[in-house]
Length: 232
Image 1 (tube, helix red, strand yellow):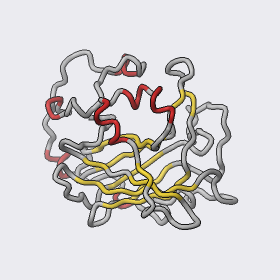
Image 2 (cartoon, helix red, strand yellow):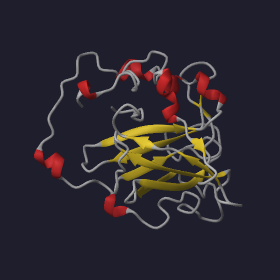
Image 3 (tube, rainbow, N blue to C red):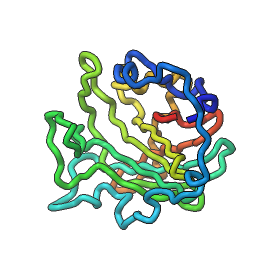
Image 4 (cartoon, rainbow, N blue to C red):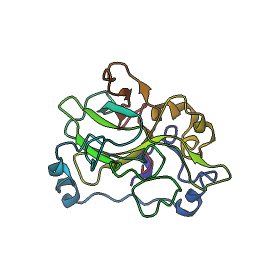
């Protein structure tokens, strides 16, 4: 990681005491940038050949005996660089809690039901214009123990792979009008001026009649409007 390339006006600090786990994981010494080797820059990108039917449709990709419970939504957007140029053939992955605020993971012991018809993960490739689209269920809020009355807002995790296996970026998408945003140190760790870059927008054009409400979430990988990422 090259610390000098991090835009500190946009990105959250490594250490944000209100987000307690950063106290343990934030580096205590200056970072040492390492140049990528030829094998890293030219190696295969993980997962591009593993896209299967319905991978981008979380309302279908884990069905066992019925539709998943919760509010169906569509999340769509465009991945661009700092000049607004689309980035095609980018692997976009997402993972999220179900409508009750529960992840399909053994570490998640939240006292909320699992949904046998909802896995909570998906992936797709951006098209030639950098567009992506997912069908899913709106995730629920859940407690996370960071502080008294700590609840994570409704959110979806996104991971983007660029044209190298080393160029993975991770971020979170939130929903407009969520009252929990004002109390969430993960969200508030991002400088206030740029928090809006993490909030999706209702989009009637993405909405599909009689099926699901649509939200737009564009992601910019570099520049003044760079999307705040967790791992940069």
